[in-house]
Image (tube, rainbow, N blue to C red; front, side, top):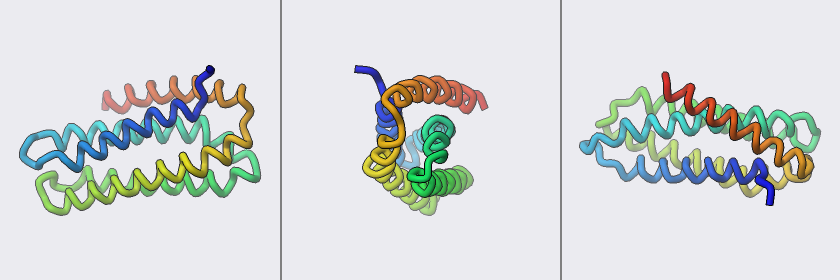
Length: 152
């Protein structure tokens, strides 16, 4: 069976969920928080960039996909702002853990909503050929963005 854009996106979604869990479990004195925060930041940013280019943009072109795409884009922006707040916070403060929890909740909400609603709507808009082609384009851009963000 041919891979679809949804298969590729779900793979990244699972990575995001796992990183959020690890981040919330990391103790402030074990030195893992900073590493996990960086990994999550890279994963979220690479995923969002590639997803916006190769799923949201094609869906925005259809009337049925306009509002769901706008909503998903606004949630990506909300996640970006939360990541920035977390990155700017003192990693050893109580406030940091609260911000990490908030980020995890926003990410989990977004992923669930996307998988349960957005994928169904976009699935009605895209052809099987498009879903397969978009998967390849998404994967290439996702890997390129991960590398670019890891180098900064």
